[in-house]
Amino acid sequence: MSEPDPDRLLVERVQRGDVKAFEMLVLKYQRRIERLIARMVRDVDLVADIAQETFLRAYRALPGFRGESAFYTWLHRIAVNSAKKALVQLRRDPLLSEASLKSGDEDEETFAVDSVLSDGATPESLLSSKELGTAVNAAVDALPDEFRQALLLREVEGLSYDEIASLMGCPAGTVRSRIYRAREAVAARLRPLLGTREGERW
Picture 1 (cartoon, rainbow, N blue to C red):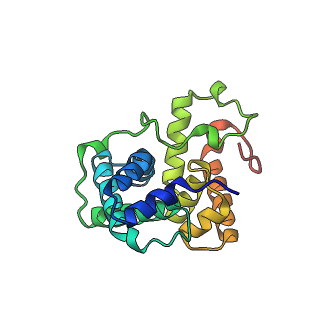
Picture 2 (cartoon, rainbow, N blue to C red):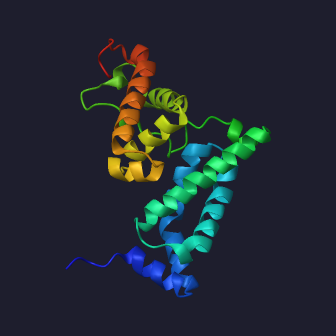
């Protein structure tokens, strides 16, 4: 007999009116949700507000949660939608905060170099890891939204293709294609820096 899902038990308590149970879910996932939002929005001043909006929307929607997906998968989808909504509003009002104008290469939650470099690569002999990290982040930021989201969900969040397909509302084959094309696009941007040839990923 499998162990009961602790998130499901907490959700059921919330649905019975136990606010403390929801606070436990917030404590469990707040930093993870904030990291996800920070990778999408790149404005530290907005991250906490969007995370708060995410949890408020989740709390209001929990009575209708049927457990057809894992709680975090469901919460992740709400966070992505909240961040997208904020980005649309930013485009309407292009005023940027001071924080958004600063370089993000010192943010520990930026795209991990190790997640895209093969074990055989030795970029340290060509660039410092910080310079390479900046180049990787710039390459990822330049990807189309659907490619960037799929790549980050796979490489940073560690989700399966099926989980990503569920989150993005598309077939798993489409997810695989997007991730492949995203990796190739990042590789094309890094190739001149790493001295690799066409046909070699790194």
